[in-house]
Length: 361
Image (cartoon, rainbow, N blue to C red):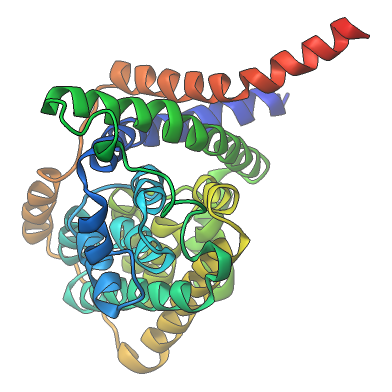
């Protein structure tokens, strides 16, 4: 059997990008509009401070958005570069993919009330803790450099412009500034994820997850942190594993780390915020997910019995589908091309300088 590694990497990476591209493009637009319309004094009261109430706002606002972990990158960075402190930003970026409405509804429908309730409570507590640690250990990354010094768009040339003009200005910032910054790291992260999954095919990962004797919570936590996992799409798979004998703590650990972290997101946080931010984010998420998974297995659900009610599950899946963005494949491909084009545009100056250097020589 021939194995074309470059083709496998590109194919896997493209599949991952297709899954995330619609959320990315929509998030670029929404982040840009919020950046333009959200006045600095309003953001200062909401999230540009160290108060616990700011972290609570970041967590609660994240809970209401049915956005995947890649789609939350532009929204979180948009808040950060608009003036939000690191703590509320990380709380928002942690809460959104874990406990968005669709994920919670599916968890109750497919995993049962016991696992789903632990998942829901953890999905609220962990973002709060991440936000507190982000504010405590953020150091120079506590706020984006120069945020307090540079004027907000609404205070400059667009202050007296109409709503349409301001939205266009926000979209320009969302795509041509934020979108270009994020896309190059997302594409790089997607390629790295494609490499990992090409070297370790998904069916091996599924066999590992499906073998209770081989599973370790540490392995699950690290695996979830580097893979691209959509909580909504993987809850049925996790439910099948639990029904087949996997411990309930495995479900919670994998869904928390898998849904809220992946290589594109971690790389983007590292490059666009800094190493302290990604350390606080990743270590808190992995550590708490392992602890909660262990407590679930040993203390909370020692005598757990798998939950399955076909009629109830079908009804809950129908409700959850109302919150899920269904994008036709051709539209997914178009959005993936948009993200790839923004990545290429971001690297153009460097490419031109390399060719200019060669011509000089």
